[in-house]
Image (cartoon, rainbow, N blue to C red; front, side, top):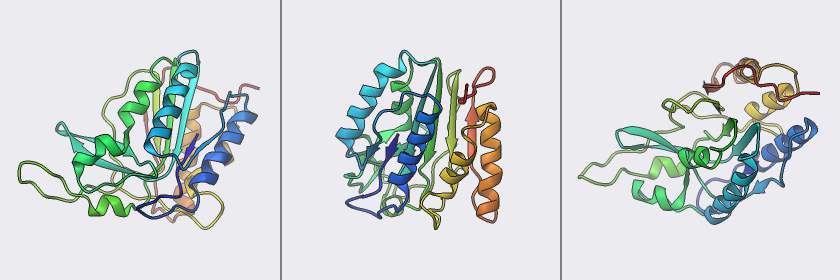
Length: 230
């Protein structure tokens, strides 16, 4: 459970820490082994947390990573890669991404031993870092795309949930949690397949934002995955 709110070089996010803490409490109530939420992590702290989590994920039937904070997408190898932004990141151009941020690919790699992997990204806020960054190399100069990118095919047993559609930005909301996390907390404890829960979350977020925000789910799970088993 990761909540990055107090960024040093870009906009502070009002809900991110509270979102991570609230989801951590909800999963603990469902019987999950949940560590202390990782709040306001720099890149070194974020990588340490992922390595520590890897050992637990290797033994897990279901491993879940929840991230609230800034995120951005950049072209890489003729595709698009999503990156989660630590609080200490300084990003001037695309060459900084590999050393200043953590890719979604790396997150999934650290979860690789779990039978089922769920990644939930409330990470599509309007990010001033993304708007100021440029692609470097080959004389090409263009802005980095806003929001996060739709991922390519994912390994079997994986679900990735984004708080809004590809290339779009998500709202912080006016309450203690973002609209996406508010909807997730409302339904996460139901004894239903998680994929079906996310469809309900999508409907709730669309209603709460007057259809300005529509969560996206990429899913290769096999069979029903029910988080509330009691």
